[in-house]
Image (cartoon, rainbow, N blue to C red):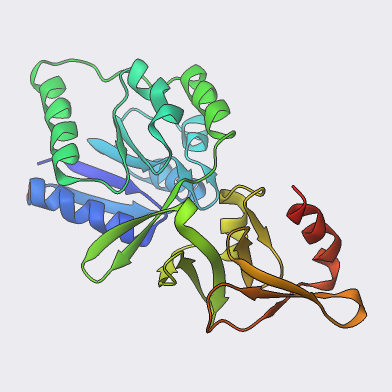
Length: 255
């Protein structure tokens, strides 16, 4: 019976992966689900190495490569990521498995088959070297998130960033609104989302809203040279741009 560890900061994606793993083999033991680099480092320092690790590339407190720099990782790793495939070709070239989110069962099954073949033929798993990590880190630092994985009932839905009009916070939760004016709960704070999306396409106009340049229906002057934004979503109230962001917002509009 394999013992696996999941390192993933998106709760719906982590639960989906856990369900797929148990569907593949109910005897597999999922030891823990960890959502950060620091949490993963602490876990590896206190526990024996698992048989296999599923590791998201982008975690709550940074790129997961930081785990390899702080602990001696002896377990084979299957990376999971929401980045476009071209940004992680280095993994394939260096024979490190990866799964593109949202993960399909057939892809997980194939990854396990490859892992089982290595075990059966006593083949060592290719080492995740610092050189490889630095190479891919350099590639990923030039990339922005291309999709968000959200949970809809018992299903996962992948929403492309270009289909998102805006993000907003409400009662300590974060939501996104799509181009067809549907809203979905997101497992990230607005602070976190600000770091994940392209600043040329999205702008945080105040504490509660991050807008895409496709979401704006109209902009009017408000009191004391401030600005008020009307969104394309008809039932959404006009949003006042924070005083300290007015100048930067005008510059962003002119990009």
